[in-house]
Amino acid sequence: MTFIDIEQLLQDSTGLDSESIGSTTVKRVVRIRMESVGICDAAAYVAELKNNPKELQELIDEVTVPETWFFRDNEPFRYFSEYVRRYFVPPENGRLLRVLSVPCATGEEPYSIAMLLKEMGFTHQTARIDAVDISTRALGRARKALYGANSFRGDERHYRDLYFDKSEDGYRLHDEVRRLVQFRHANLLDDGFLPGSGLYDVIFCRNVLIYFSRELQEKTMIKLHRLLTTNGILFVGHAEGGRMLTDLYQSLRKSGTFAFCKQGSTLGGSKVEALDQSAKTAVVKPRPNAKPLATTPPVTPSKHQDRPAARVSRIRDMPLAATSAVETAANPITQLHQARMLADQGKLSEAATLCESYLGKNGVSADAYYLMGLIRQAQDQQDAAAEMYRKAVYLNPNHYEALIHLAAHAEAKGDRVAAASYRNRATRASGLESAS
Ligand SMILES: C[S@@+](CC[C@H](N)C(=O)[O-])C[C@H]1O[C@@H](n2cnc3c(N)ncnc32)[C@H](O)[C@@H]1O
Image (cartoon, rainbow, N blue to C red):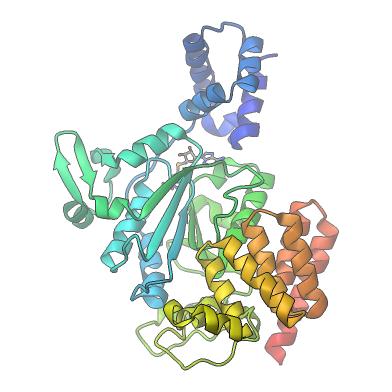
């Protein structure tokens, strides 16, 4: 057992290799930790790391670099605001805008997002930011929300004046902004990363992929693909955009930011221009296959009809309160709507029950099976999810989203042949639909 074993263990646990962290740094940190636990032999320390998760976490906390600051790089935040204003403002009761910031380090990124949302009229009842990091130490600092001058490196004076109280300890963020953010400890490498979290409208995953191997980058992108809504946006860091999986994502081609949407999203391709020209009359029309709920009846056009999340916007246009239990039971289509809405809110068990009841009463439906797949996936039951997607594809061989999910599932299982085959089918399906 040597120092190399410790480096390997760290890499296996975090994805960070000592080349990117710096071998000298790792050596120094390991020495400090060994001293602090009173172990002077490398082999004994490796054994300690393997047997004692607390010590492994201490080492991880020591070795990770939570370098971050408010409104880092600026442009992603500008584009985020543009997207949210265009599709989610004014905030609606009963529909939570969900954002994931991973890794969030000491909190400057998720709090920057929270300040923007606050400014646009969101509260903790209409928006939630899940902020995730592997470092418990960084999360501890994030939860305190107390910052020094080093966290303000850009031109965010306006936000500092508006949302922080200056004290002799530093700048303390107002509670009303803090309430929008929930911090969670999790490892991006875990197979069951954020089980049961539901889907996110926007994901920020910046300045961590660069430290991962190509293989881990790909796995991470597949995980994030599963967590993103059909018409959501994923932001990655400047040095990370060139490595995206192009069969899963497409670039939104915004200068100064590496923003991506899913293949098949209504934001993709030339539709990006529609977002740029939001002040004009452009309307983002969902692709036919971007509405999993094909059984959705036409609804009265509303101010939100051009939202990218067509699959949820139709549901959101119907106030939840108006959909009573009696109405739901009597109207199977409403039932599927309701299931979809519950799923989008992260109420997965309720959504699954409603969906199963729909299937029980109404027989087979590709869209219901697809929705069940999304729910099982969000519950981190990947094989059960794939089974549901297969049923959806059996009933509708051109179900684009189900095919894409099956491709991602096969990829995650290491079955590249099946993955390629599903992707080809999805490409053909999208061609069929756009031609029809
Ligand atoms: C440079 S910071 C990035 C923070 C922020 N996203 C930004 O761009 O300013 C990198 C963070 O990645 C976290 N990290 C490293 N490996 C991770 C993993 N496997 N899972 C979750 N977080 C991880 C570290 O703890 C550190 O806080």
